[in-house]
Amino acid sequence: MPDSASAEPLIPKYKRVLLKLSGEAFGHGGKSGINLDETLALATQMKRLVELKVQLAVVVGGGNFLRGAQFSAGPTPMINPATADSMGMLATFMNGLALQDVLERLEIPTRLLSAVRIDSFAEPFIRRRAIRHLEKGRVVILAGGTGNPYVTTDSAAALRGRELNVDILLKATRVDGIYNDDPEKNPHAEKYDRLSYQKVIESRLKVMDLSAFDMCQSAKLPILVFNYKQDRAIEKAVAGHAIGTLVSAD
Image (cartoon, rainbow, N blue to C red; front, side, top):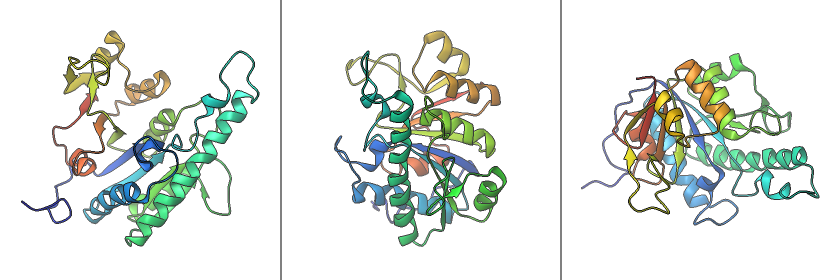
């Protein structure tokens, strides 16, 4: 059997996609910081997608360095919640810069865009410019969330997905889809293969935060929740293979 590096390329179902990567995707085993082997594995899959003419935007989180909530917890936090969230936004830049350099080592052109003005190493996010980068085959890496406190990177992914007119939002997680209970705590939890937006609401399933989900539902933007750790998972997701859980209007 061929290994994943030499396997036949998959045929993309979607032309333009947004991939949401949490900070933990850049770490290893729950450890903080960036693991270059993990980052290279992600970048290698992205390279194959670009070679197949898929237009790829990536929203990166920063939880492998810090989460704003950890500094603003408790009744009298020492750090203001807005400041803590700003610290979390800055953490996303470290992952974005690492991913950018690894992709360019693989000879894939990139642009790092941000809603937060850090002109020395990131372009400001301008919708038309971002779309033009995608059309030219560049991977658009989106750091800094939405640039606002009290807003998750899930909401940033939904917002950018709508602005960039992507065909699907790929939410990469460490779980292989959406379950009726926490599969890490309940071994009998049942996985859904497909869900409607309405079913998610009625069953109170945790797909992403409510504002992010509402944006996707309003635009009828499909969401695929899948385990990025599985072999060639990102490529299979873009090819429309039956992995993870697909949430859509159907």
